Image 1 (cartoon, rainbow, N blue to C red):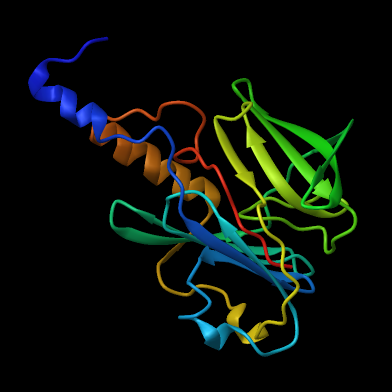
Image 2 (image 1 turned 30 degrees about the vertical axis):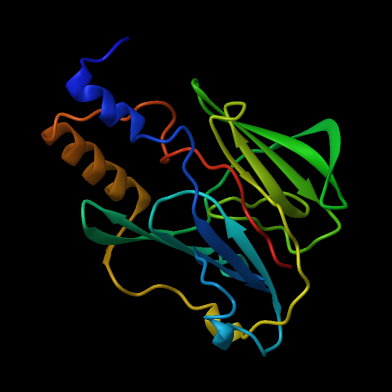
Length: 218
C-alpha cells in the first residue's frame, strides 16, 4: 500500500526490527531477567558468588523473577504507564523435544516445541551443558539452559550471542516489589479491556515487538 506523501515519513520512522538490552542472572534455582546496564556503569552487580546471564532483546519494560524450587514467578510489566506484578507459578509449557540439533556459541543444543495456540508455535533450543533448567523471560522447563527462543519461525526471537563465566552478587537477584499485584488471568483481562476501550487490536502473536539478539553471561 502506498501512503500519501504527508504520511510516508511515519512509515519510514518505524524500524523493521526492534531490540534492546536485557540481562538474565541466576544462582541455583533463583533468577532475574531485567533491563541490562553497561558493566562499566553497573560494577556493583559483580563480586559475589553465583553465575549470571546477560541478554539483548525485546523492547518492553519488563522484569521477571523466578524461584523454580518454590515454583514462584513475579513478572513485572509496565502497561499504559501503570506497573503490574503478575504473580504465580512459572509459566507451564508441555514441551516436545525434537530430533534437531545445532551449536550455539560452542554449546550443543537440542530443539523443543510448544504450540501455544492455533497461531503461535514456540521453538526452544536448549543445552544440557548449562544448568539449571531455566531460560530468559518466562521460559524454562527443559533439561538444560535455553539459549534460543523462536516464535513463529522468526517473527520474534531471543538468541544468545555471548556467554561469559562471571561471578555475580546474588543480592542482585531480588523480586520486584513495585506495582499492583495481579494474577496472569487478571492481567490479561485488564489488558484486553483497555485495548478494547482504546479501539486497538494486537497484531500477530501476543507478547510485544520482534526480538533479534541477546547476550548471555553464564
